[in-house]
Image (cartoon, rainbow, N blue to C red; front, side):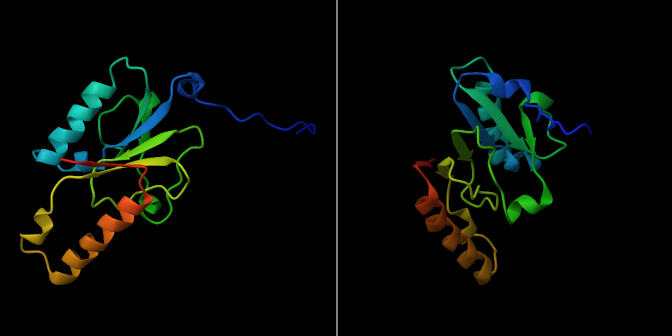
Length: 145
């Protein structure tokens, strides 16, 4: 190089002046479930032209336009940082292991407590019960369905 600093390329979608939000579509990895349908409905609604600039955090195989997709990576369960341009992150399940550690505002959605009534081992129920207050404490907004 000739001593000049290289310029960091910014995706075109980030140039919008609309508020930028991320919607976690992690649960779309389980087709034919209520959570899949819920996430698909969110995607259908927010992928239309709205007053928000929406990005979708999803698995690589999930069919979403690439300019709006933030792909889930294996290490995100341990240390997920939201891009600094993001104003709001919507976690669509209270059982998500992927909640950003960065100071982005968080919408935390609680759907149900079905994990308490299935055949889950006690340690797993206890783990899920600990996740809920942690998510609530981290959240700027809590939604319950």
